[in-house]
Image (cartoon, rainbow, N blue to C red; front, side, top):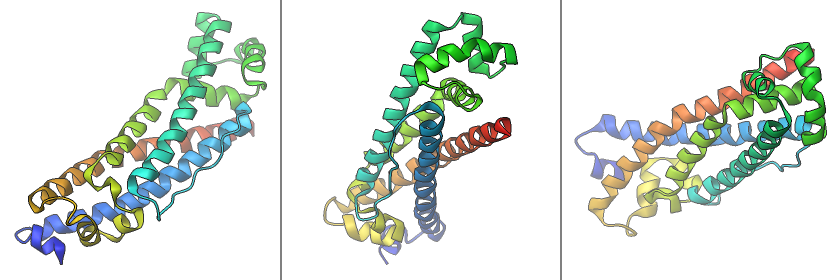
Length: 220
């Protein structure tokens, strides 16, 4: 097995890389799913018209990263547009209450006109979603950055289906494209990228789930 060639002295290291590939599969699928859930929420509560994205295992790792990065950048741009317009229309104190989601019934009535002008809708769901997206914008930025790192790595040109099959298939796919002494370095780079990708993905997924549940509870 290829992994035996590059990690003959360290079976534990091979196992770690095998687990990383399995982990990447779960994280990629869950990140695409979470993004589509965010899209659904924005389309429903903010009158957006974003389209769902799909994981394509026939495409390369880079191409799949580009799909979700492109989608996230569109979402970020829309949040920034809404944020800018609301900041212009709301009193500073009211704007800060929106960001911290500490609005009273009176506050909500006061911002309804601004929301209707900016989003075309003024509901509790819209208020919660916008406030949360504005306040937690760094989470979107962070996961986008991590996708960009993975999409720019040495293994990015490998088909996603091959990546999901594990370390030996990855090595076989790129062997011949790079020198043997560079391969071990590329695998270590891949390992480090995935190590950072997991917490960013979990934070992203957890926060989307949190705001969805919060909207549902407030709408009951």
